[in-house]
Amino acid sequence: MSVKRHLRIGASIGLLAFAHVAQAFDVLYAEHDISATPAGAFSSVCAFDGAPRKPLQFAEAVERALCGNPQTRSRWADVKAQAAAVGTARAAYLPTLSANWQGQREHSVIDVRDHPTLSSDMTSTVRSVGANLTWTLFDFGARSAALNSANAQLDAARALQDATLQTVFALTAKDYYATQTAIGASDAARDIELMTRQTMLAAQARVDKGIAPVTDALQAQTQHEQALVALTKAESDAQTALGSLAADMALDPSVPLDVPAIKEVDLPGQTFAASIEEMIDQVKQGHPSVRAAQAQYEAAVAKITQTSAQGAPSISLIAKYNRNNQPQSIGLGQPSYPSTGHDAYIGVQVSIPLFEGFSRHYQVDQARAQAERQQDVLDDARQRVALDVWTSYQSLNGATRNMQNNANLLAIAGRAWEAARRRYDAGVGNILELMNTQSALANAKQQRLRAVADWEYARVDLASKLGVLGQGDLLN
Image (cartoon, rainbow, N blue to C red; front, side, top):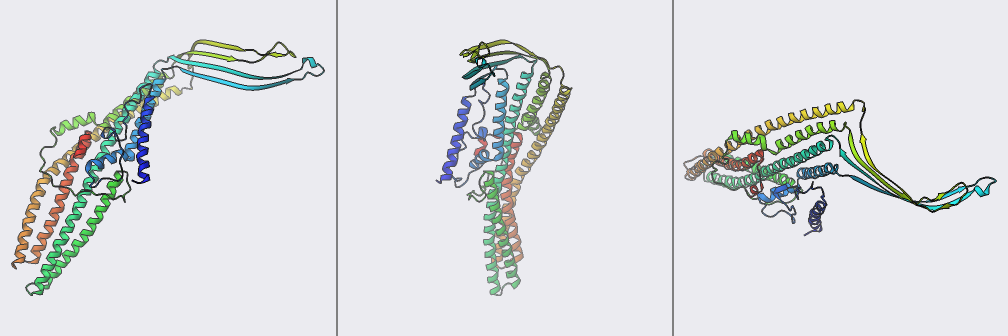
């Protein structure tokens, strides 16, 4: 293992250790349920030892993406920042205590002309120690509203993290299946190139024997060259897809990946038991993006109360204690003597904002407008997720039906090509018939690959749009 990989793993372990230490000092219990990794509930470790395994399985690809994608890391950081904001809001209910210490070396000279007895030359070291206490006892709900707003913002940050994890999961799944399709298409193109090569050689042999016109050989050569062009493009597309998948996993596109070709699956049955109407009702209430918008709206409403209450009076307990050793003198020209002194007070302070230049009125109006905006955002989120579910549901239905259609098409195309090949070998068929059935078989194979990949992705996409992707889906 390279030094770079050791450092990467060590850094991951160090970050986890730091996170646990930081949470150990969570006195106000604001950061206790932050996920240990950017992957949230999908992974609690996110420490990968070296390059991806060979072959790269679906679960590892998704887990690497959830752990390393900048979007998931950013949302994780947002949750941590907002949790700290909740701690700050809770801290407003506690007193603040500050202490100060001051030490200084003083040298004071007083020279009274013609009266040396009144003159003085004093050197002293003065120290003072003090403490101040302030405790807000009542503020007409400003702190309560601030805490409600911070809690709502934390709920929104967590919901946005969930939504981002669902999106990244679906995107990685799409790229993984696209990569499998591209690799399968490349393998199919290689088989087609071999098949057209054999046809070209057979046609040339018939021409050499004088039992077929030279146009048969030329047409077969043309189809073989087209197969070579298609093979080159398929191989290029496969490399492009591999690079996209590597980027999803926060790896360099040049990192070699071994992704297996997509496998044939059994004909799917009913994937989701709920009706589309039930799905839409469910997603309009529980999708992470809707929950985030709802929490942001609640935070905006709390902000109105907070802004208004900040213009109201507040009552605080205040206290101070100070002690010093300032030297004292009984008069001009008299020697100074060491001494100590202290002063202290405790009391209640009432702060009443009398005039703020009408700014409070406009701040409250601004908070109300922002709450109205968040209500519109919430309505838009509900409409958007409902449309997303409808679209994904229809895509899954179409992909499911096409699984059967493509299976039938592939079987028929295979039988047609076998029949045309036997007819051509027997000398009763022509080259055009053979080439047409050959092209139809090639297209059917590629369509079958796309159909399987489309169905696999459509299932994940609908689950993502419903916001119900979980750790169990990594096993698909």
